[in-house]
Length: 167
Image (cartoon, rainbow, N blue to C red; front, side, top):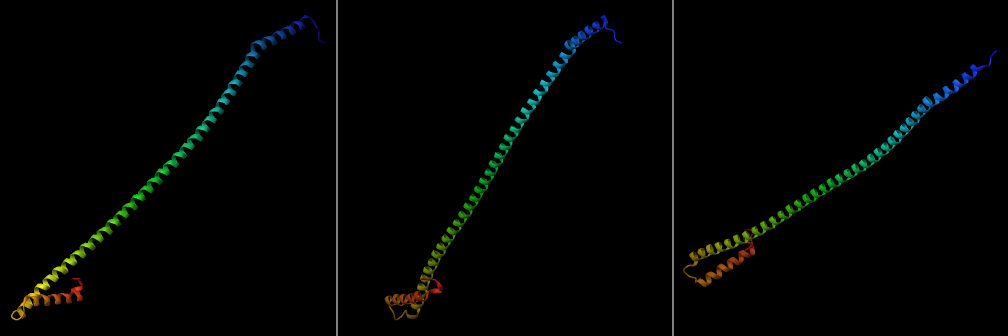
């Protein structure tokens, strides 16, 4: 059987003192360290969440800036291509215009040279005709009749167009 004597009370007091000492010197500091660690971990998790959110916002911002830069680059390339095509078209049109002007100038020069050649040929024909007529009818004709004969001959040549040239 169990005897209740003074040692039981001493053991109970010792036990209560031990519990109080453990509570004061061990349990409270351990609980305090646990709460501090829990708070520190919660703070770290919050900071990590904030950092992740900021990183995501920065990533979104950088992606938007990158897309904007790509769009601007494409716009610049498109403008450069359009400008190059416009300059090419302008150069082609200028060249065509210059060629047309050169053709027109050449045609005018050819026509002038043709007319000059026709006049020169007409003059040579008149001279040759006069020389031939002078030899043939030198004895019996006067100079007015010679001029009329040559003029009639030249007028006849104008009607027939000498060598495809207009006189």
